[in-house]
Length: 197
Image 1 (tube, one colour):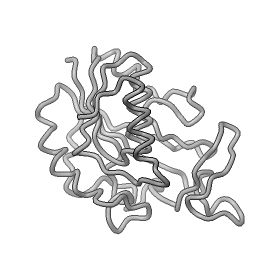
Image 2: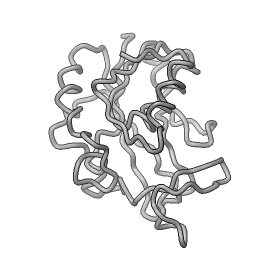
Image 3: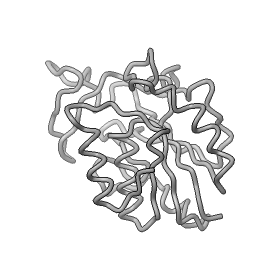
Image 4: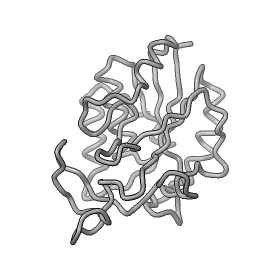
């Protein structure tokens, strides 16, 4: 087993009608479902925040969603409350196939956000995914999911830094595109050796 599909955060809150809806977020579901059979392994990530998470604008007096603030680990976009553990918003999209080898939950530490499937936003605290992949003998990753310019981007770049062969299926991703974040993410992914398919 060498090639895994890493499906990033295809959850209700990132789909139309959700608390942090990515435009067209639900459009990736049939594409991802169809791709699953092509891979040796399928891994799903799930944003899994505590109520009152430090990345929520509601946790900071006088702050609004999408403002930038400084955290001990660096700059942090403040988000609407989303993907709170156990809520309907945190649940995978109803049509997404979830018969995966692993479901990795991230962002569950209240004091730190986690865009990447590999590290918290301090870029040093691991999620355990690298160890899982190494143990399984997986060295090649294809990423799809939400959102291209945040969790997909951070996961892809971290995977490349860790030495995995990484590609992103751009047709099976959708972006938030906050102030040009999509173009910046695409440039940074290419610079890190990530293939954009």
